[in-house]
Length: 103
Image (cartoon, rainbow, N blue to C red; front, side):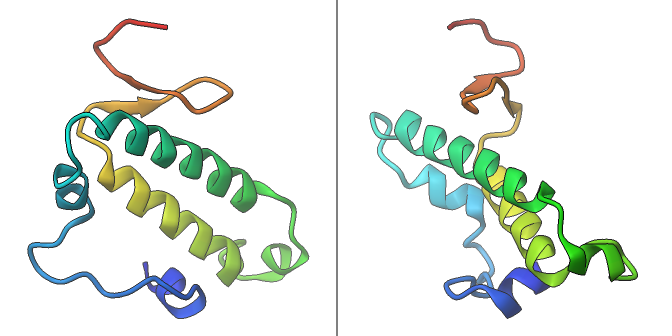
């Protein structure tokens, strides 16, 4: 998280009791699938951005530059917001429960 907080505006320290998961819990039930899909899309987008070739990553001791590390930090935050047991699958990043079925 440190890289995201240092490099990306809008990333703030979390207060105790205000976890990303609790933020999703406050979304009304009928809106939750839309928010979950938005999170899935954001995860797919940011993970793809972090996977792009980068000359700074190539020379960084951790093989991950600060910008790409921040992208992965955002992916971690978005994943924390999804309910436990949810996975991101498919080319469009649709959200499906591990045990579920559906389109």
